[in-house]
Length: 212
Image (cartoon, rainbow, N blue to C red; front, side):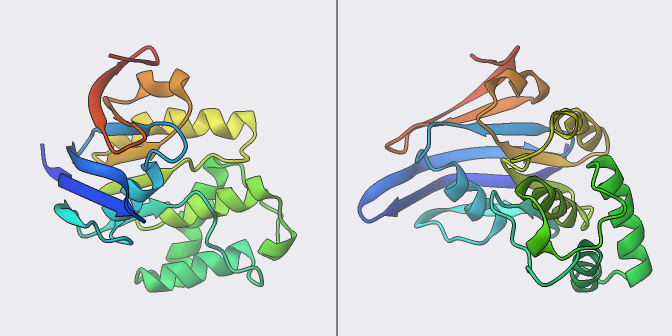
């Protein structure tokens, strides 16, 4: 299968503290990898390096040309509505306003975003903001999907829908990397990359939410 992300010997330090030490793994089309570890183990740092937003001190990252990246904190503009965000991000992706709205409507429906919500982002709850955040990331319809705990603030139904959709992305041929603390969901992915404080790591299979 086509490799959409290849991380080779990546290391990163902050203020002389080793966060990532010689990390290597590949993600192929149709494959899902979970990244787990304690707070401060380097999960978000690794995902930002994979997305091309942060430089590694050593090692290489090769990725597909199009990447969907959903950060943990919504990168939204308070003064814009959800619809305005769709058109704004869609324009950057080369989509017409009609195409962006159409694709966005399908994503919002999946995420149970209120169809009658017309207020600006400033007025929305954190969970609702996160739904917009995830929808905007997926608007690109990219072969590589990088997700940093994208379900923060979701209601239970939307949270379950998110994990169920992992199988749909895999079936559609996307490679998925998801940072998570939810060990009970690890049976939904193919492999688990476990990062440990101090930079060590291990790549394992996933079975019934248990690292092996």
